[in-house]
Image 1 (cartoon, protein in one colour):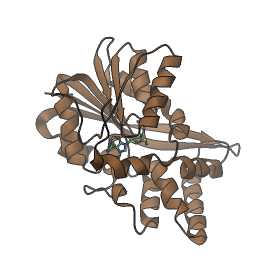
Image 2 (cartoon, rainbow, N blue to C red):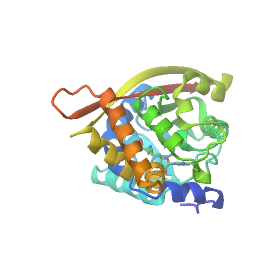
Image 3 (spheres, helix red, strand yellow):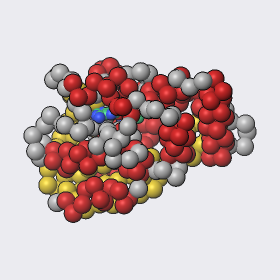
Image 4 (cartoon, rainbow, N blue to C red):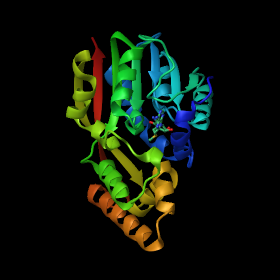
Length: 271
Ligand SMILES: C[S@@+](CC[C@H](N)C(=O)[O-])C[C@H]1O[C@@H](n2cnc3c(N)ncnc32)[C@H](O)[C@@H]1O
């Protein structure tokens, strides 16, 4: 394992503020679809960037790939390695900023990220790194929240509510959900890839809309920090607005919450 570069310390503090794994366990299905879409083969070298607790890395390892999981938060990667080990799977872990991947050019057959690289502040630099470490003919696979879906709307709600976001949360290239638009991805990757996109709908399930919001505000690290810093009146308004978004997306008729959360699945084959 390499040391975390100083330039990542602000982002690392931001993302270490809560145990995102408590949310990630609900998204394993997205990772399974992604490794299928990218057609990960046994024996291929696969990189999961901003892997967190390893949903996508583990899904790729289940297909027999030789997987490296990277993130800026070491405790998340340790959870990933532990989860894999429980299933009898090996994972390599490496602490790494998505904007500065510590791998030689053309190292991997497939480079993946589920709701991960979208949070690195410099979108172009990140896209360039994904292309650089992927072999010609290799595939980049991303799952990115769309700006118009439920999670995109929650991102907008939180961004509007925070007047002074921490420096590490500011993205010079625009919001994370820009990655959820095909146009932005085409602009970032340019003619270096053949790109296809599919709009998919994930389902977020909880007993009630209120439980959904409580989970996000407790375990989505940047949102937890922002919410805890708000005065009580603003907290109430943000909480209620978030519940209203979940209610609008809810298809359950029995008082529970099964909310549609749209995302863009991106598969880019490197030329
Ligand atoms: C929403 S979580 C998704 C984690 C995981 N991919 C999953 O599907 O559960 C976002 C992850 O991105 C990581 N992250 C944020 N900025 C990063 C950066 N610049 N480089 C690498 N990882 C980063 C966070 O530490 C966190 O684990």
